[in-house]
Length: 137
Image 1 (cartoon, rainbow, N blue to C red):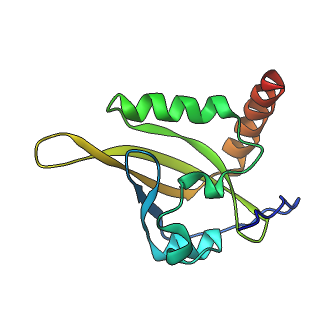
Image 2 (cartoon, rainbow, N blue to C red):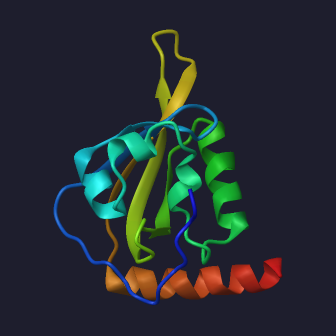
């Protein structure tokens, strides 16, 4: 599937949380209806795909390295993420990613719950991510 190119157009949303679950490798195993609505993908298009299917090119690699380091240590990660919709628009989310444990206390995957990010937090975070991207170049 060809990835859309990012448009300079933000998609705004309100309301219910976006929820997804992944396996240990970041492959989507569950996407709630709201996630499908906001991302523009159907559940069948999301499940089985790496979660980075919605990664916006403005997101620095170092930011996701920190996410993985945090959640793989068994700790909850919280921060802002800029995601890319199927139609090329983008949206910012205030995200919390936490490990999912099996009955024996072993991590079996991860759950992400997201809500709309505040304009103030977006502006602050966008500047930080821009600086991080410049350092990656």
